[in-house]
Length: 331
Ligand SMILES: C[S@@+](CC[C@H](N)C(=O)[O-])C[C@H]1O[C@@H](n2cnc3c(N)ncnc32)[C@H](O)[C@@H]1O
Image (cartoon, rainbow, N blue to C red; front, side, top):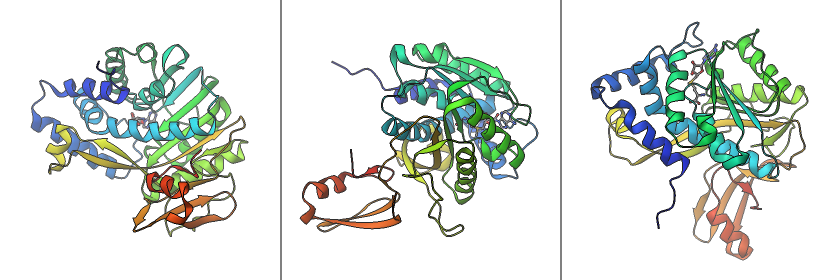
């Protein structure tokens, strides 16, 4: 008997059909142009995703990766608050809906939250609606797609969960602050995800400080809501999610690797009490002969390296299975 496909597989299948009818070079050119505008001096004062080719290229090229990054952040939220299920969700700057797919996967079935996606780019909303409509997933099909501009005037309806995924980079510092303040006011839980780069991490730390000042507590990745122990400018907290490569990826990037690793930084903060991990693995574990080196961020001692050896018995087995981003010790 075949298992039913995962949400990631359904998304992949929906995206595969997207570039049908578009000459491959046109899709690759659109991706090149998007990469250039995302590397450029953002923020922009007009949408980068201007037409169907732009959004199809964005969705096919980036959505599997942003989906996986948000999915990891939501997994961390669910680990910290296993009994909590949001009834409503607002995805701000949601574009073609990657975070909404991740939310639909995290809380499936009749309990799935009602999602509203807000974005200023109508072509992105239109494509998002189309993909969600073809998903066969009720909560995605029922999603509301609404045009909204992020800025000082943005007002969000009260909601249980707000996601802001790969959006802060596109905003001015003032609009970022306005968005995080409004998310903190409107939501019970706020999830912010950015690229796992030094500047992405800085935006996450600024958002984290703002969420804490607004009365929320950090649920993940940090084991505490105190200051980040990383000395500014010396390192950046980020994680990694494995993403299968599409044929468009291979065309744009060359090579034949079947996957790539999406690096991302994130923060999850809540108004309700949560149980953050005692510590989190903040680098890829190094497996040596008879020992595993774990770089941890801990609640009590900040950054710490643990060496787990065979002498530790069961813990050693668990350390060998531990992955970058996991809570430690495992529950
Ligand atoms: C890099 S995309 C991320 C899309 C989606 N959240 C994801 O994770 O795949 C950034 C999105 O933010 C939207 N955006 C940027 N600035 C905006 C603004 N001022 N108001 C509303 N949406 C904005 C863009 O239109 C785009 O859909």
